[in-house]
Image: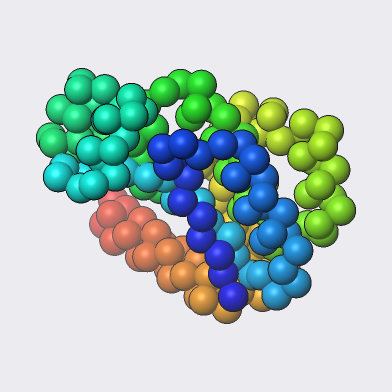
Length: 164
């Protein structure tokens, strides 16, 4: 099975995320773990609550109303630099969970090694981690998706340069 975790929620703490990471790390049959970032939407209760509780500002509401935020796969509606960097630290650890033992994950958390993950190049490292995890855990759906993407890239490349 796979697990998804939404981050960037109003009131969310490091303890909440660590608890989720340890819970998923203890699951033996986990083949994929993904993080999705909260993205506020206009006229939704959580957006109003976030504004009321000062998690977002009136300026952020303008961005929400005009769709000027990164997507939920990137960093969503998290605008606060400190919170964004903190959450990026956990993103890699969560993605690699299916191939790590609970003991290894606990060690990474206890020694604070995860705090260095935000300095890694986000997109390439996540792609490498996802491919590695997919093959190690034999995630057939993900492997199929990888081959499909490679086939499409190859098709577009040859179509573009075939006549040149």
